[in-house]
Amino acid sequence: MFCGFISVLTYQIYAFECAKPLTLKVHGFYIEHMSTEHATQSADIDLQRLESRVDDLLQTCDRLIAENKSLRDQQNNLVSERAELVEKTELARSRVEAMIARLRSMEQKP
Image 1 (tube, rainbow, N blue to C red):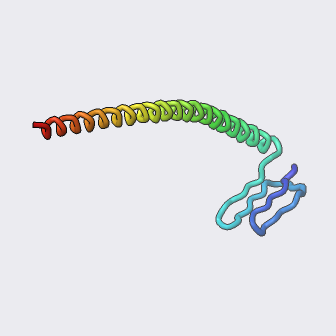
Image 2: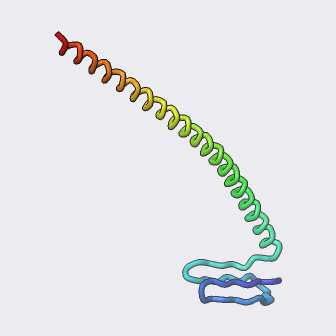
Image 3: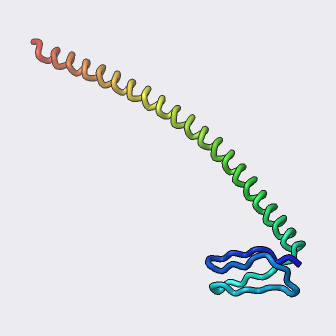
């Protein structure tokens, strides 16, 4: 049975053959020996979990990229609309000021 290599902080146990399961207590954590088959199964499960999480992250990234593009398009549209409204407001203001000036000039004439 192959016990493997374990390194936790300053405690190290190197590869050796062991007849019975090995349990270490390091800083309050228990590290137990796993058979090669169990370790492989555990690694496969961990790999499947990691694969699933990576897939989820990729989907989230794709969704966020699409959302970001949509928000940028919306922002560009709003900036354009605001510029048009500012231009219309300035045009209306200048027309109103011109009308006020004409009315004042009409009042001053006898």
